[in-house]
Figure 1 (cartoon, one colour):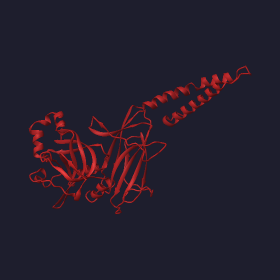
Figure 2 (cartoon, helix red, strand yellow):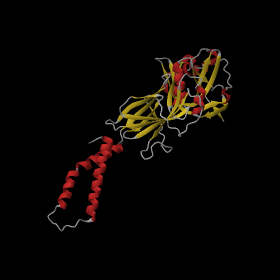
Figure 3 (cartoon, one colour):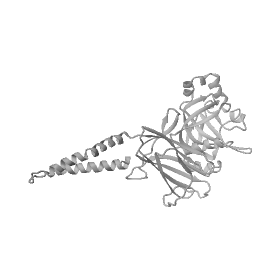
Figure 4 (spheres, helix red, strand yellow):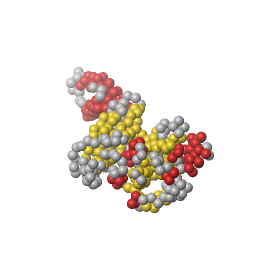
Length: 375
């Protein structure tokens, strides 16, 4: 357990399906991934609204961005059931960018996701009197300002995915909860604990995260899921490998082929989706992978840029050159061996050169066939 100082609570609720999807995606995306939350201006704390709009901060984008940049926040969920209400903090985040969209009159906050949070006994020691929460009994979402209160949470601790999924399984009407990690797959080792985690990068055009993958390479999505229908509560195990299907996977490009397999262990399952990136002809291909929750249709959209491998391009040129000169070099060897001088001595260097030449040609043909399908 640790004391955590926060500047804002970014609150969603169960009043609308889209807000529940915000919470669902706040759980699904990996650490350091940047997602967007949008807020109607009337649901900003008065002090926050006055600071942004009455003082004219929103007129200058850079000033607005600096106002919010690197502020600490917690993604939160306000559950309303009749007259009973509960507030859950479930994930820490850092605001990396802020935009005021005058066309829709919304404040857009771009949050870099961090660790999961769990409040001990799910209690909050916050005085909501005269706050935005106290003002709107039927509010949908809001930004609750903690800066002026200087509030420090003393009863909060970091949590694991299975703890968060178990709590929210009774709050959100999803059949399946999951969290995603993208890793590089090594051909010699396959999927194992040594696979390198791929970190998301910032797309400056959208202020959201995306992954940059290299064509001709292999990756995989490691997805830990929790099925609400299964009442047995246990952690993942690799002993049982019964195949089963759950969420739907959609890919917006033919540049990626997938192979999905699941390790079934009861409530929690380890899912692996192999991503085989095909060679591309252009420098970049923009695509995405969508994971669709089966009951609600909630979409987790993973943005991907496929980059052409410069190293593989060099190898392609070199291999093509070697194959191209195969015939004239082979003729040189043939003429040398069929020389009219029958007493010719074949030196070890000649034999070594011939073997190296054969290996280069064989390797080049294999490379062209495997990565570029040049038959």
